[in-house]
Length: 71
Image (cartoon, rainbow, N blue to C red; front, side, top):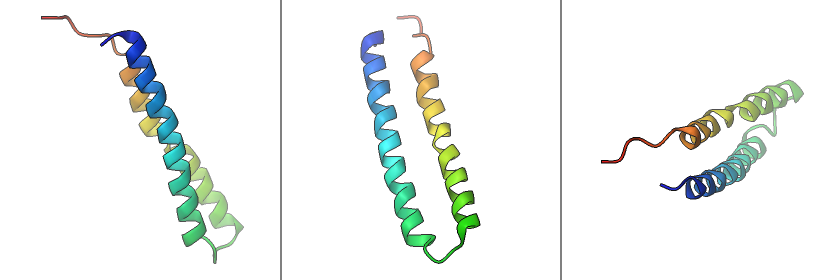
């Protein structure tokens, strides 16, 4: 796969990941955390704010992998 195409796909995947993850995390926060206090909100947003990094690291690792030998 050409490197420019790979970077384009990776960029689109990262942007989509952030948007979808933010929508899901916000929906969970609105539906599940309404009756809890500020400490629960802090812990949830701290955890969910860091959790998106794991799939993003996978996408970035795929982006920097060198292509294997052809043949």
